[in-house]
Each structure stands twice: as C-alpha cells, then as structure tokens.
Length: 366
Image (cartoon, rainbow, N blue to C red; front, side, top):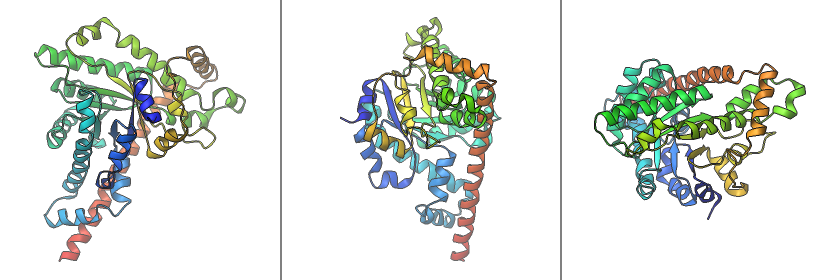
C-alpha cells in the first residue's frame, strides 16, 4: 500500500494533473493508477506543454495536415485522442468505484468563457466526441460559466468547475450544480449518473499574498493563507451539502460535488514540497497533483485528516489578513482573471505552433 492508497482510505482521491500521449503509450498512466492515482486533469497550458514543447505529436500533425485538417481540427483530434485513451485506461477505476472516480477532464476553449451558450454547445460536442462516461468537461467559474454548468449538469454531463479561489466562488458553483440537478430531476432523469468537482486553486493564493505581505507578518502568514482559505471553504462544504436542499437531491441519487484541491505544487522553494497535500486531507475531496508532487508525496508524505481540524488557527490567519489589508477575496478575483488570460494565452500559443507545423508539413509535401 502506498501513501496514495492511504489518502483514499481517508476519503480523498489523488488525481494526476498532467497529460501527454506518451503517458498512455508507455504505460506510465497505468503505473500511476497501480500506485493509487484515481483520475487525471488537463488544461490548455498542459496541452501546450505536451504538444508545442515536445516532438511527440509532429508526425500526427503532419499526417492530419496532409488529410486537409485545419489547425483547430488538428488540435481537436490530438486532444480528444489523448483524453479518450486516458479515459479508457481509467475506466477500470470508474467501474470499480461505481462511477465515483476514474475521471479525466477536458476543458472547453478558454475563448468561450464569456458566452454560456457557446460553452454549453462546446461541452456537448466534446462529451459526444469522447463518448466515455468517465469524462468531465471543465468549465471556469465565471458568471457565464455558472449558467453553462447548470445546463450541462441538467444534460447529464459531468463537470469539473475550474478556476475557483473564494468562498463566494464555491457557493455560486454549488448553487449552479444543485440547480442543474433540480432541473434534471424535474425532467424525470437519473441523478446518480452525474458527477462534478469544484476545483479550488491553492498555491497561487499564497504566491499572490507573498507579493504583498508585510515583512513583519511573514512568520504569521507565509505559506498559511491559501490553506486557511481552502479549509474555510471545506468547512462550508459540509453545511452546503448537508442542507435540506441537497438532502432532497441526495434522496433521488445525487452525489455531492467534491471540492478538488488544484494548483497543489508549491511555488516557493522555502515551503515543504508536499505542503498542499498534507494540510488538505479530508473525506469527499480530490487533490490533483503534478507528477513531481505525486512522486514527493509517495516518497515522504504523511497521511492524516487535516482539512477540517485547524479551525481556530485558520480563522486567526484569515483575521490577520483582514487586519493587515490583505483582501483574500479581491486576490482571488484577480487570480481568476489572470488564470483565464493565462489559459487563453497558452491556447493561442498552441494554435500558433500547430499552424506553423501544419504549414511546414504542407510545404514539404508540395
């Protein structure tokens, strides 16, 4: 038994935040699963790193270009193929857990974040294209995204809500999820087949706080604010999903929308490399980690329930922030804006790389 298996015994599912075709080709994903990984997440930046910063896809791009595929069609083919094959590897986990785990996430284009109708249409298209029950469509927690989340859940499409930073984000997303379930129930459809996670970004908050942290407060707040923020949200999770509203849905087969702790690789070398895993362990949660964090946690991670056992110290940290003019909610809103831009920039860069390789392939063929 590994520490990842121990996490699952605590009610937390460890997922891998990484995607690349050789992950499936060389059996690495199956090796991770054997060690206790129970899902995979992806995003536009990870696809940019996989496709634009390796030569693994060059032959595929040339082949698809020769078939007359456009740049967007080439990306679509490459990303859907990677996600579909990852879903197939994870299918055994999905089946064994009766649909509670074994998911792989694919994000809608970041260019659509301000249009819920296009987001819904794209989510439906990707769901149909991958055609696997253990797919999750990733949608950012923007105002338009919330509308899309409600509709996709009503459609019976699993959703990973991304780019969440604040308690307000969490409550808005939980409301969208439950509204979608209520719409689905009103239509007489099965709720038990729908799953969702609410992705709370962790380390980015500490990085932003560090940039504005008064020197005198470093010992009290450095490396602590993001954890306190997320643990405060986790406490709220029990209230929201213990409410009469959700209890009624649960009686019809609904699953809770699990908090997913994302951005859990440390950004500062002054912090322990498994900080955002060891301090956020609790039932009904997911922690998605980059390979280096998973490796570190397998090597020297400690497992005990921590996500809801430090309320007094967490409240003190957040109170100190307020007293010193550190507005965690405002920081979260800015981080969401930056995150959307970062994903959009990564997507644009990836499209440019594929377009260049496509043109080169066609030129060589000519």
